[in-house]
Image (cartoon, rainbow, N blue to C red; front, side, top):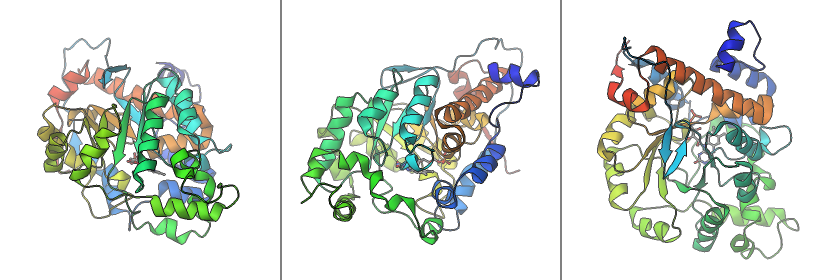
Length: 381
Ligand code: FNR
């Protein structure tokens, strides 16, 4: 309401309220290496482009004569009540985006301010315990890039559990990094700087693998990290993953309905449909186009999380209509962080929610359940 009323009164917003202008402002503000890292995708970025473009061939049909004076966007995830189904997808190395190098803390503060949960990345610049504290009372998820060393994996998971995270999100599609020409073409690729490995460099099991502390031999520490990164997971590892924690395990990167069914059979507590925002495999179809079949296979047995291509509030509503329980956003909040730190990210989240709320109002859909029942229609135009 605040954003809308300000707009109608002619008060200029501090940051743009639409994605295209936000992205343009962020492009102008970010140094090229940071911009390439955040914005880049795999190959010629066809899949990344498709992710956003595909929302345009799904449409909603408005319904009239429904009292929508109040809307209820509330959701629940693993027993926690949330004001909305929106969450922040994990973004590693977020520290390079903000001026002070603490992008993860800034994202966590945006989470605390908006009630939009953060899924904190393994590759955060800030230790996972501090990130969780900065989330305040808002629930938070911890994303795991599973290390090859089982002790380091167990240690990261138990730290996340001890810190109070509500679930572990295991990313399946990144045991090796995809072919990202924009990163490869940039000589000062910021990810190579050792400080991005904060969660490893603060981890007792990881430090045991080093002959010297990271500050004494950064090159060796980064080398050891490289050698332990990226366990190749198979279905046989589900029992082991489950044994590491009492927290729910969500599998991120599931796109095929058969994989979703298998995941649930193997004990997954949540299915996260995502193609990593087109950063890992080029040539794949848009993530939103895979969502309906996965949601159908899941049949409500576990929550379905979704990300890849969300750029507006109407995209959020369409994702719910197509079967998501929770909707994640990646690059847009990163642009908000770049332009305004925690406030900038909170602004982006609030704009997405405000648009979603108004769309539900004018479409005669007072609740998320009504959105789901209404569904979305595929159009080739
Ligand atoms: C990511 N993503 C990601 N995923 C993950 O599981 N762990 C991570 O550390 C990262 N890091 C990361 C960095 C950057 C710069 C981006 C843009 C993305 C993928 C992310 O969680 C999510 O799947 C996509 O960003 C969703 O697509 P959109 O919203 O960016 O289109």
